[in-house]
Image (cartoon, rainbow, N blue to C red; front, side):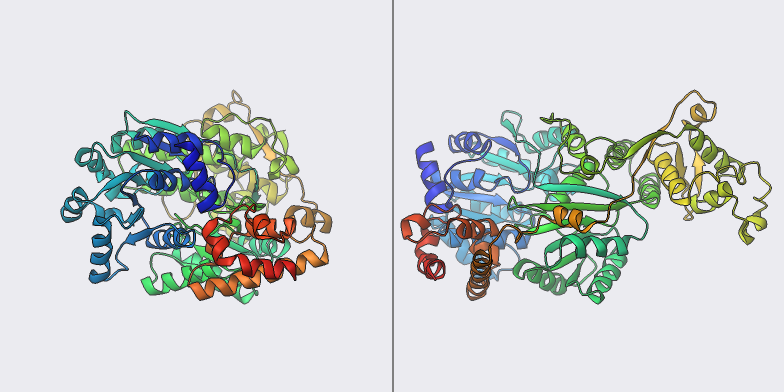
Amino acid sequence: MMSRALAFLKDVFGYPAFRGRQAEVIAHVADGGDCLVLMPTGGGKSLCYQIPALLRDGVAVVVSPLIALMQNQVAALHEAGVRAAFLNSSLSQMEAAAVEGAMLKGAYDLVYVAPERLLTPRFLDFLARSPLSLFAIDEAHCVSQWGHDFRPEYIQLSILHERFPDVPRIALTATADSVTRKEIVERLGLDGGRIFVSSFDRPNIRYQIVDKVNAKAQLLAFIQAEHDGDAGIVYCLSRKKVEETAVWLAEKGIPALAYHAGMSAPERSRNQEKFLREDGVVMVATIAFGMGIDKPDVRFVAHLDLPKSVEGYYQETGRAGRDGQAANAWMAYGLGDVVQQRRMIEGSEAQAQFKRIASTKLDALLALCEATTCRRVRLLDYFGETATSATCGNCDVCLNPPQVWDGTVAAQKALSCAFRTGQRFGAGHLIDVLRGNDTARMRQWGHDKVSTFGIGKELEEKTWRAVFRQLAALGLLAADNDGHGSLRLTTTSRAVLNGSQTVFLRLQPERKKTAAKAAAAHENKFATLDPAARILWEHLRAWRTETAKKHGVPAYVVFHDATLSELVRLRPQTESELREVPGIGARKLERYGNDLLEILRA
């Protein structure tokens, strides 16, 4: 069986060998076993059900939550010569009936279906008459109420096990902590199945978290310095901020588009298609955008607001560098983010248990943001994986280590100031009090007379801002739900005030803004190419763009950047040499071989 699987991998998908635990998963599912697969974005999850679908008799039904994902997956399978189709609301009644008729006749190896359609009694009855090889449940974290992207309809997918007990099921996700994994197994009835956990490490991604000062200006500087002309995603918490940021970036010469749930469906679809099909487009979005986006050449993911959890952060940043090439995960983070997220949890109408879990998840993310040791090590530790080294050499903490200082006295001053002013003011006003700034507002409230006025002159404003942010992150200060960002003491503040608890804080050193460092961080994709190779690269990209337009698919469906890079590196001159390039299967060789050889020989 595995020799056949390897033949499919090479002939259909164009890869010489399986990666990680792919071979184990494929053998298990092809043999009729159930399983849950946790594999990072870009780790090759799709092959874990696509190859068993080719090995087993019948049609594989793939449950997928997004229309765009289905369409792109099917387009990529068609390019590889695989018989595949999708059933979703984009099809007319007649088109859907034609797909279903072909399914009954065994004309497809894979059919992608939205969960809403799958769960209808009519479609379940239809499946009972179809020759089924397996069920694949993609984005399986959607089943968990503790996950970052809960979809109510996913909870009902346990019906597949009840109605079709002899059909193997494979559930797949890129992110799930132990709580989420347990719920996926319980809700999908996978108790007897195996759990395959691959490494969560994405070594090609550089993690950077910067102190938020002027987030938009910081974002623009980051894009211009490190990702000029690259495709990227910028995440914002609100729809208004998405629209404002997209317009602002466009005015600054960055080809940016907006995406959020409040836009009309046609406008969202147009923007998504442009992002997928054109090079160098930056999508500014809420988390409504991104799940299942299969675009491999996203070179950066930026956050202008704090996500809700480490899972959300990992899932969203994982959309960068799916092709294995260098990519950046950049985030601007400040006190306002901490206050906003804590207020959202406390002010929600959720049950107490949900609030506790949400707070625990937020605490874990804040610990990652305030880390003084390697961010990658902390990230892997969260998912239960032990890093092979104490440092990764590819995150901001490793590249530019922060200083750690005993901030106990500063913390006591900050907490005392919040108390002396009535616990009714935000960080900006408290910093003015501590630094002794004699303003009209200070005199209005009489805070120029309190005992904490001017006791913090020894620290700069930006240092105090970092102190307050970290005190909020540590749970020593909390935000009131008054809409003004008022900071109040918590039950844990007393230990610091009476001196029984020491507080160590991080102080980020000044960044060295040298051209050499910016160039090194960017790892320019042209840096190692000689002039002839650069010309060949551009020719291949131009040919790919034109070919994709003719076929009506995104450019990466024709070939990934990684395949073009190998063509430039190897410069094959014959069909047999071309066959050895990763990503070129038999169908693509037949379809594009002559065109490629003509360009390469020229």
